[in-house]
Image 1 (cartoon, rainbow, N blue to C red):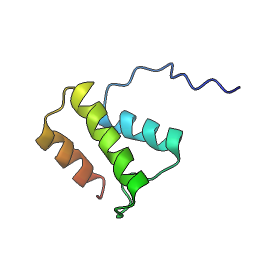
Image 2 (cartoon, rainbow, N blue to C red):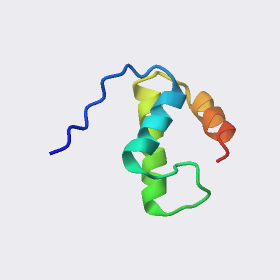
Image 3 (cartoon, rainbow, N blue to C red):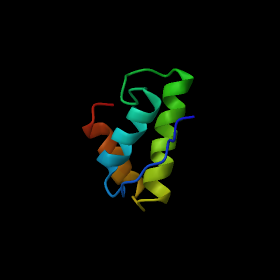
Length: 68
């Protein structure tokens, strides 16, 4: 059984998105509305809002800067 624990401290939105992409294998910035992509983007927003205390406008600016 593979151990999926993360031993690093996540402090930036870039680190969160890179970790999410590496764990799921889904490019959350792909221009699509398929359910799995939308759900993973929503998870990213949830983590950024609730764990990194980012404001909605900052989350929006971050996602736009990544090409979505």
